[in-house]
Length: 212
Image (cartoon, rainbow, N blue to C red):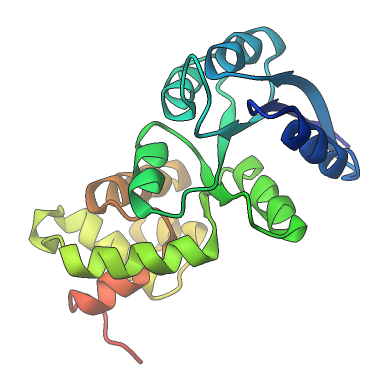
């Protein structure tokens, strides 16, 4: 079984040591390096080619948001799971806009770290549940106009909200799985919603589906 290579980026040595200890208990994870600031994280990501970078937000020299923006431009592209003490949705949106695959609070339990890491490795977006709920409420207040969506995007949004899987949507619409994934990514970017639960809430609020 392939081991997933992880790079740690945090300016606190004790935090890195704690994360390393947790990750090394997981059977398919290998910690390949540690960075103490954002610039070093980008450099090591280019050299070590990790599958995932655990990236702190607040670091000297180069902050985690900018480091994420540079890291995801590397090839092969590592996934970035941002770690932060900040539970403000503004930070989450900045991290995701920079290309992060997830946002995890440092106060989260160990099991959530495992779930978040597994999710981003699978290519999914992970947001700590407590922040996700806040973001859904924030989205509700801002209420973007779904008329800005293309007909195809509205169609796919409805199918997602109705619980169809990516493969089911692809078969129903006679398009490729990757095409569905592209539409979903564009939907999330346009609506500034980065989880399925948020899309479902938006679809209900916008009248695209009915709340059962």
